[in-house]
Length: 205
Image 1 (cartoon, rainbow, N blue to C red):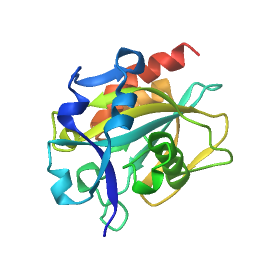
Image 2 (cartoon, rainbow, N blue to C red):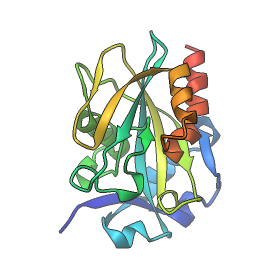
Image 3 (cartoon, rainbow, N blue to C red):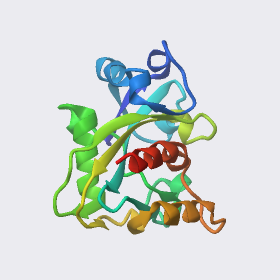
């Protein structure tokens, strides 16, 4: 049997509240809904096209609070490095991925830490703080994924880990916004949607 991903029935997840874009954590308790109603489904094309299920995806921003900088990276190209063809080459600030069955004990937080350790190299891995949620029904990727957004604060150096990243480094707010406006780069939708909140978070530190 192949890998399985944590999912929640879409009707249950959005039964009391539906939103589009980014929603701060204090606006609705999606964490409890997820933890009380999740199951696992086999990953593959069938799941990626099943709009009745939402695959829960941790999405962790890494920030240097002392310098006021944000870690951003470019996703790799070529199926040998990055298997999700719909996201290849895109600029992203979110580290994360599917929640696997091996993450069963406190699955959201455990998956966040596992993904950080897989995707970036740090001297010490901080525990991410969940700050909100992402939902984007405007494209094929967004329709079947639901993001749990977190911020991991560090003063340490961060380098890319596995080959899913072609490059990555810290950017100042100005550098990042210049990158976001550069037509030579395609920025991931979830990064654009959650950036205003993260920027405000940085400004308040």
